[in-house]
Image 1: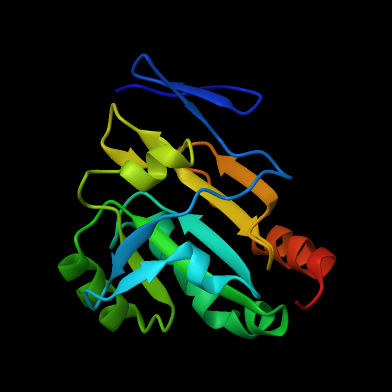
Image 2: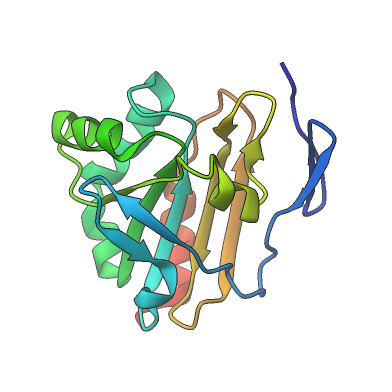
Amino acid sequence: MTSGLSLGGLTVEAGVETQVPAVGESAPDFELANQYGEPVRLSSFRGQNVVLVFYPFAFSGICTGELCEIRDNLVAFDDANATVLAISVDSKFSLRAYAEQEGYSFDLLADFWPHGSVAGQYGVFDAGSGMARRGTFIIDAAGIVRYVVVNPRGQARDLAAYRDALAGLGKA
């Protein structure tokens, strides 16, 4: 099993270097299918804040806990004019079953094929295990990255940190 080494914004995974977008940089644009097979393009959210939540796998313990915490506190994101987009390497079919089981009303995006390509753009794809790491990127209404955190394997993210970062953005 490969673990990543993070050096500033540079992450090394299985001998491949990927760059985590830094605060102040433009967020890489992408288009992925949501749990219903509908295309979702990041740039279509210009004019509002976006919270990208990369997570390893649907139906796994820590991931479910994190996404349920977002689900249960979605008003905090709405109050900050922020759309949550949760991204994993699972297929849209798995994501639809997962969203239905857990009652997620936000989009779950399938970074299934090419496998992990968007996670790779954001420097959070772990090629050794074939999954996205727990990376969170808050992007402002102009498409600029304003908050970045990448948690170590097995460590859940802190919802309070999202709230603080979103409060600093204000409403678009």
